[in-house]
Length: 357
Image (cartoon, rainbow, N blue to C red; front, side):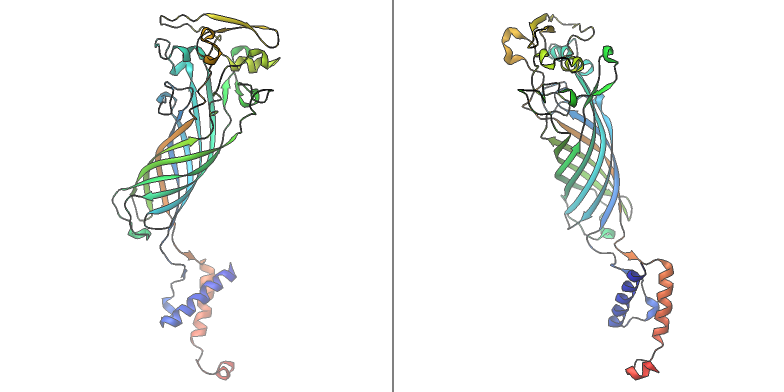
């Protein structure tokens, strides 16, 4: 620190000599407030999930009853009149359940109600984004306008996830990790490899930013995360032969939950049972409802919709504090250098011989 402050002081002394400023006007700052300011902050958001366990088969569908909280921290750097770079870390929870979001009185939801799947997923996310102001302004932080600045943002992110669900009461009813169970055959012969817990996300959104103080900005932002995975909810493809799970009764129970509990509908449709012999030679009975309507052939044996990838939305407010564009020496070192500077100011500016005297 002493060497750093010495460098700061020497730099400033030379600057004084070039500008003929007297020593007592020493500013004791280095790298003064300049363009391209930086900021740090945090965000409070609401998270909403879009995927296979939603009211409608599309990314535009969600159930606000499953809105959950999200917390984020970030650092930003302004590069021009319109561009700001941002690195953000966020944590939040996504949930969904057929038993609640699907209505047993609706002809549209009746098959999802029979399917009876659910999930909970904690998301740990790191994103790098660019924020592009739609109304350019000064790069100097104290010259920011007081008007509302609209902006758009997009970037790239990576997140860690691990979908879970409550096991049936016969297995204790506690939360269990779904990925190790391979609920759609993952990891077993003839099926896909297990999906990764680390996935990529493409965040795209828009927002509005308002200056609320010399060093404070408040933003409202809506940011959609488009994913390359369809297993955010552990649901994607088709039901498989229950005999594939061999002696793993928990995996079998989490794969097909249509027979769990009293799944009575309040519509004209009455689901019937379908019984078949599995690859392990055992007999299995399931509903011929969602994904198991064998009368139309095995192609209708769907459990999810692999054509539409999952996604989620984060909506909330961000509070940013603009960092000073300067570095200051600690006061003890300031006093030490000030004392040495005063002594130097009384030395005669003459030949080297005069200085030795």
